[in-house]
Image 1 (spheres, rainbow, N blue to C red):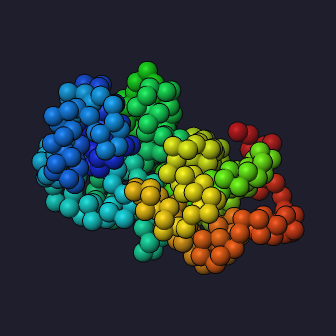
Image 2: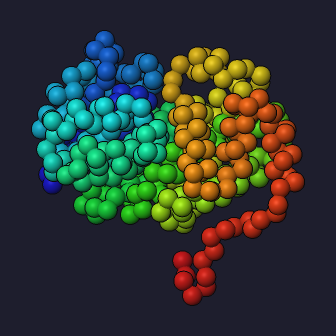
Length: 343
């Protein structure tokens, strides 16, 4: 592939914007597709995305547009950063505009309700001939914009795609690691949003550091247990897209899902919290889907069951914690590498 790429980032939210800007600063032409024509015009005139990242200067190589066909014309790399509920609709439109050799990378952390499908599965169905990858990790967009050192994981079956994305996003403050466990990396990014809500609840109720530590580690156990049932490698969850993303999302007020949990812990209703947030909190949507799929597969997920009961059955976190403490004691670490297997 060429040294200078023609790249499109579809989705002008905070993460899409910051990823587009890193690539633009590396000398590549980048189109940023936004649904709103007025917002796209503001971005081009001010070289700033004031709706999502006020004060963050955008590179001259980045141009915003609200015309999808124009955004993806003659590109060789496409990054999809739309909300999960819009992914299939946008992917279907993209299918008529992009070349089958275009590299396609999902930046979206979420699950489609019908059939419990991850974004990579949707993109594969709608763009079946394109090389596919997933970028995930502990990536709070505002901190990336502020220049804090950040790591992410690019997962794909294609080594060529992995190498190209590592090159596109290489910078002094952003490093991209490689993985071939696309499903595990993507599941980590989707599932951790649910546990961030639980963590926010615990923080608001001042349950204590010991409790938060237990919640985090049991969250990781639940995530990896479910992922193995779905065909992922449990060791993937020891990396950036697993424990790294979980820790950040469960401990930072910059996390939308954490803020949802915190507000709920302060006594606000779910409807009030979502209205005040004004942005998508993927964890709320993921919770229902995860609860249903775990029940269908017979996967034990007490924290998911508990949060569902809090949000939809008027249970309290104290009740959930109490039931957790009297439940049957199980192994701390479920997936152990035998000495002869090595690391």
